[in-house]
Image 1 (cartoon, one colour):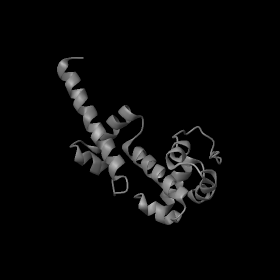
Image 2: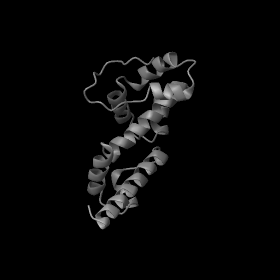
Image 3: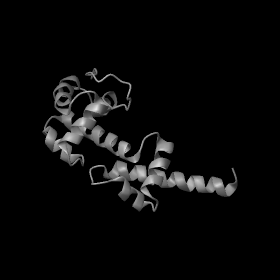
Image 4: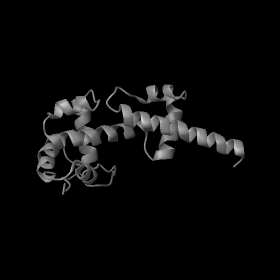
Length: 148
């Protein structure tokens, strides 16, 4: 790889990190791939292809994973309803939120809320977060995973 090609690759990776960092920071805001792409001055298609090549998932998928991770933390606390959590993490559709939550976690948010509160009682929040972190795996069975 030539020096200019290597420099361009580093600039591209820095741009992708900025997108990922924005998603991490603003996950509860109304973000979409077009808005993310505009923020780094590339097309939505180009951003999606490059992001997936660098991080293994699309920007939308990464955003939803961050939202579900945050939703899991809020549900473990137990003081918000599933609907309140849905809107607190930036989702505008309870149906889409519940479907994505179930895909990633293996159970509906209402079931998770009930079981997680019992399973993580007494655990420090940092440990509970690590133990219950969603893992994107399409081959995983869609059964209730162990929370302990």
